[in-house]
Each structure stands twice: as structure tokens, then as C-alpha cells.
Length: 153
Image (tube, rainbow, N blue to C red; front, side):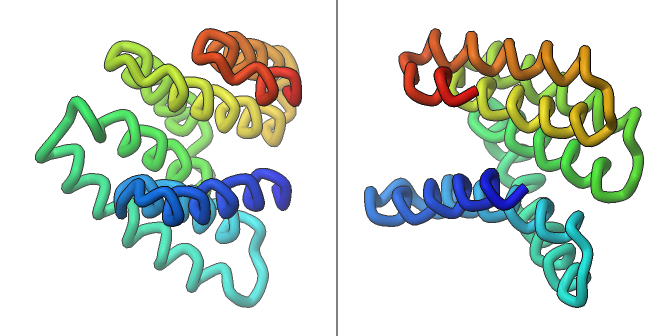
């Protein structure tokens, strides 16, 4: 989990430097907050509160601009279901987020969402679905041109 969290934090920092805007940084930070809340510990309630704040922000974004934000909201919904132990809903919503991102032409985000789904299935000890999700992520990263990232998977 630390590697994935560090990857998200790194992308947030790069996004801020590149001037990519609040929604990009907020989305990645919200994913990080859900991950930290799942790890437990003394601060898990604080992380959950921050995650839910971002989740609600993306609910509003998705309502106002579904083409650009529905897939983000779906992925955060999956992360929220995962956090709450609603694993069948989490699985369904991870898949929906991937399909929506693909349908809307956000290949790079479909790849990231497939990777998140792979981590979820791995955590659930569902090796076949985890393997399938990571394979899909790899294929999508290659389609997008992110050969280095695809190699890392």
C-alpha cells in the first residue's frame, strides 16, 4: 500500500507543479485518504473524514459534468465500498469505473482504475480476478503509451 500511496502523492506533487488544477490533485489525494483509512491506526477516522469530503466533492463534479467526472466518482465509490467492507459492491463499482473511463476516452484513468481493482482483488485473495485486472491495466497503459508503467506491472 505504501508504494501505491507514494505513487499517488508523487503524481499529486507533479500535478501541482504542472498546474493541472484542483480536481486532478483532489482526486489523487482522495484515493490516498481512502488507502490510509483502510490501513487503520490512530488517525484512520481523520483519513476517512478527508476521504469522504473528497468523495462528496466528486459527487458534485460528476453531477455537473458527468463526461469528465463520472468515472472518478465511480472509482471513489468503489474505494468507499471497499473501506466499508461492502466487497461485492466494491467489485461491481470498480468495473463500472473502468468501463466509464474507457467509454469516455480516458484510457490512462481506465488503466489506473484497473490497477486499483487489481489491488482490491489481491486484497480479497481473488488471484484470478487480480491477475485479469493487472493484465488489463498493463494493456491500457501500453495503449496510452506508458510503456515504462506497463513494464512495472
